[in-house]
Structures are given as C-alpha cells and as structure tokens.
Length: 396
Picture (cartoon, rainbow, N blue to C red):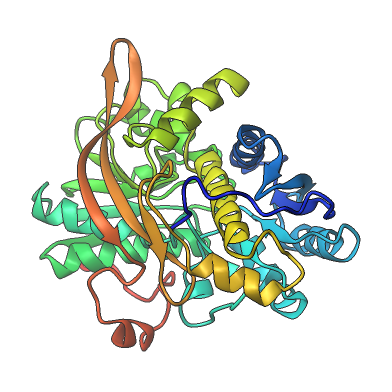
C-alpha cells in the first residue's frame, strides 16, 4: 500500500514527470473522453501538480475515437513528448490498435479500455487496468439476475463490437450457469439512430440486458419506453449503460434499471467523498466511471513513484511498482492487481431510483474482490476463446 505520512523523496531538481492522456473529444464517445480528462486533471490539482515531490505535466491528446488516431497520438506522446506514463485510451478498439507499439516502446500504460484479452490470452507486460475488463462486472450481474432476481429467460442487446460481445458473453455465461437462458441476442451497429426494429423482436422474456456505451444508453432507454416495453420487462445493464455521469440525461424511463459497476458515487471512502465534491465544484457534474477511473490511475502512478523514489528513468521498475500496488482508500474502494496487471476489487449492483427529485444509483449488493476470471479456474478459462459475437448462441 502507499504509505501514509512517508516523506517525498528530495528530487526538486529533477525534470517534470510527464503523463500523456489518450482521450477522445469528438463523436459518440466524447462525453466519456471529456470525463477522463476531468478526472485526471482533478487528481493532479488535488496534489498541487506534484507527485512524490516532483512537478507533473499532463499532455492531453485527442484520438478522434478511432484506431488510427489512437496509434498516431500514442506515438507522438512517446517520441515527441517523451512521456513517462500514458493514461487511456477509452475504447477497446483503440487499445488493441496501440498494444504492440506500447510493448515495443516500453512505456507504462494505464487504461480504462476493457478489452478482455489484454490481460488474458494476449497480455501486454506494460499494461495496467484499474477499472475492469469488459466482462468483469457482467459476471456478477448474471449471477445476481439468476439467483436473486429469479429471472429465467432473457434477451440481450448491445453494440456490434468487441466491448459488446465481451460484456454480453460474461453476463450470459454466469446467467446460464445458474439456470437461466439467453433466448435472443441483438447486435445493433454502434451508430444506430433507431432501435425500434430491434425492440420489436423482444417478446416472451423475463428481462432485457443491455451493454450500451457513450450516449447510446440514453437513446435506447427512451425508445424502450416509447414502444411500451418499460414495465413489461425489467432492464439490466453493464457499467457504461447506467454510469452515474449519465443520470442527468435520463428521465423516468430509466427508473428501476439494475446495473453492475466497479464504481459508484456512493462508495463510502474518504477519497471518494473528496473526489465527488471536487468534480461537482470544478465541473458541476456527478462523476462516473470514466472520471473515477482516471483519478484512480493517478493514484496508482503516485503510489508507484513513492516506491521508486520518484525516479522514472527505469521503466521496468515503474511497471513492476505499479503492478505491486494495493490501495485501500480510493474512489472505487480497496483493490489490488493480479499477475496480468488487471484489477481485483468490488463490484456493485445498483438500482436506479428517484430520490428527492433526483435520479440516483442505490447500491443494493456488493460482490467483494471480483477478479477477471470470476469464480472460474484460470487455466480452464484461458483455454477457451475470448467472448465473441457468436461464441455462445442464444438458447431457445
């Protein structure tokens, strides 16, 4: 753990530490990308732009939300800006586009992007993830839906790309392992204006799970209510579907939604109370996973620098220090990392409610110390393919 009260090393004369942020400020993912920048900027402001006694500079790079842009910006951060760490990118397809380059450049990468195989079958030794894999929060959600909600037959709907496949695969696996059945799987394109043709196919189920991200959850929930499905079939979702930062954009159509998340504004840690208050003061927003994830990444960088004596020249020592971190007071609660560099921490089941006129996600169950392999044997898990679009077809 980062030791409280330990004096920072005397490195006042050293050059500033440079943190490169790969984010996205245009397109459907822009809202999350802007929140990422806010979270990291707030962390550095809270620390007076100094970590372990050294001045820190943040260099923000807009990837444009596409693989080519992510790779170009990553190269610029490393080769032109000489960054010591990279935080980001947001999307799995961006991360997959830069992973080989990062391994070659040997720069520690702390990302929110959830691509499962980055810490499973194709691990990158320079990668650290303090948020979750795509499927990590959906494993306990499938368990909860079957065991505690007593749902038997469900439909899934999410975007037609890797993040959607891996979320849906995680939910389906644990839901079916506990006696449930996914009887319909729908895959609208990421840019879809009208979900009505997909919603028209949903019938004879006990509930609907969705894994939408960006601004898509807002459109989906409005159209779900418009076609008369609200109140007919309960709705469940992954962490991006009902992220706290989205609540200002929802109306009553989203009330009652059940979601699983690795973060909540209601986590009762001192650092989370400070983080939430800071986000509201600086940006007048309720924070969610995108900003919390980058704030936590900042905490990881700080803890690693304390271990290395604030030295950044030995990149292997930096990534080793990062992976050895165990923190107890963070906005997401206590966590540590497995041997692949993926987080092990709490997953919260939340119910979206209206309280005192405001929409809030109320934590109704906490699954402690959830890892990326859930309760499965790691070797057996890795011997099977990563969750994909057609790996587990619907069971009629």
